[in-house]
Image 1 (cartoon, rainbow, N blue to C red):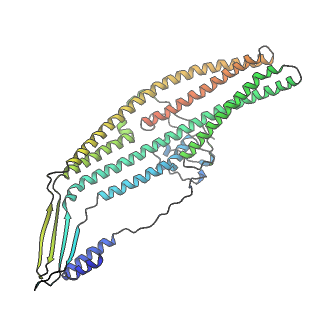
Image 2 (image 1 turned 90 degrees about the vertical axis):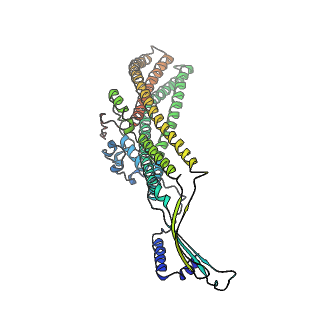
Image 3 (image 1 turned 30 degrees about the vertical axis):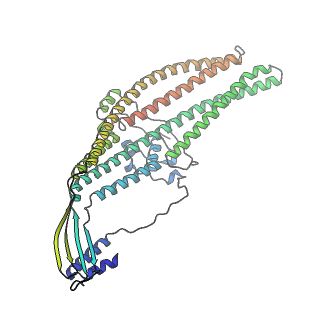
Amino acid sequence: MMLVENDALCILPMAMKKYISLLLFASLMGCATYHPTPLDAKPDAVKDVAHIVVHAADMPLPELAAHPFFPADGLDMTEVAMLAVANNPGLRMARDDLGIKHAESFAAGLLPDPQIGMARIFPSNAYPGSDTSGFNLGLNYDVLGLLTRSAGKQAALATERQTDLNLLWQEWQVVSQARVLFVRNLSQQRLLSILQQEHALLASRYAAIEKAVASGEVTLDAGNVDLAALQNMQTHINDLSRQINTNRHALNDLLGLAADTPLNLVGDADIPSLDEGKIQESVAHLAQRRPDLRALAYGYESQEQRLRMSILAQFPVLNFGFSRARDTFGVYTQGVGMTLNLPIFNGNRGNIAIAKATRQKLHDEYQLRINSATTEIARILQDQKLLEQQLENVAKGEQSLGMAAANAQTAFDAGSIDSLAYTNLRNASLAKQAEEILIKQSLLEQRVALLTLLGGELPEARPAKRNNR
């Protein structure tokens, strides 16, 4: 190809050859170069939290940006959320997508390149006077590309902003997941502590009964109830330990850490109580608060511009250019030309119909998301009232059963009640303690979801405080 171009250049006027050579040189100077980036088949998950850098300025929520990050003394709930934002693998992929959208926006703003055409003509059946080689040289430009450039650029900018807001919304989702996993770990550890204490008590009792059976003081049947309770308690501990292991692995995966990376989780789940009246006021501003809704609005704007592009593209495609030529008789010609598509059969009507249908889908999706958000917020608020009432009732029941179990311990030691009655009271008290822990966990998990649905932490909510450790 280059040889043909050079041959064609040789027969052009000197000024034209310099001009074309300058154009070719300038285009080559702006070309990108290729550099390979080989894949690495080895896992690169971080094994030490201390090696992860967390920048406060990169945090998607004000309460995260204002919170100090000191992994050396353990990770509280806010620090776990900060670490998730900084190192979550899914967020790294989303940030890569944002880089692609930045590049697409840059590409949409570039002007279309002109086209140059060159040809060398040799006579195959020469007549007298026609034995001269000819050439054609043309320079063309797509004018329609200029007409649709503005709409295309605006569409790409809106898509870029949409991707940016989708990334922010995904960061909020990761923060919510990190908080939920922290809350579950806290509840599971509390429940495990209670079960282990109960297991230690049952094991001590059963050991004492074994000695009594061996000495003939009591029958073997007297120890069977305690043995069954001990084995049942061990089963509960084993099941809960597996749940804790699953939760810890899920948290490590969310944080982008290796499966065997130890995490020192400290502090309590500090989620402020929310004022329902202020929440209802915030619901009216969801479209301005939540990144996903704002992203959908930008997606709708992008589609508006794409519809505009489709409408502009129905006009005839116009290519305008200049040409210079020499025939085989040595006659030079030059002129101006253009090509025009006639929109008779197609007229881009199909693409216009697709663009309109897509715009309607985005319009309905935006409305559906707002409706779903308000419905979910109302459901959680109602659930919160029910859970708070249940927690109050369970707390009263747990207190009464705790006192009854303590009295039963004294009575059992004195021989006033049998082992079955004592075990039933202990199990009832333990079940109420577990129920209270699980209700508190549900309350906190729903509150985390509510904060996300409302568009981040509420300004009027009590700010989270760093736990003293």
